[in-house]
Length: 78
Image (cartoon, rainbow, N blue to C red; front, top):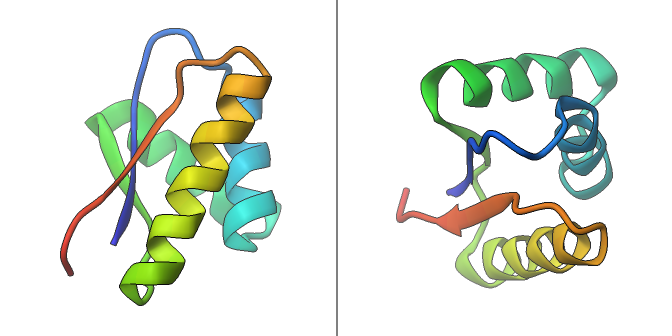
């Protein structure tokens, strides 16, 4: 599982962009996941084989860093 963690600094719009770009979500689904992460502190972005999940986490973390956001993404065994 790829999990996204809430923080008080990353804009909601950026989180939606990440979910659309790296997890192929449409706007409605990305908004729903973003709100879940915002309200509950953590949310599932998707369930993937380990190698794919690891790649997605790295892509998200690199993209967030490039855009100077502290967004955190992590792996958890499904």
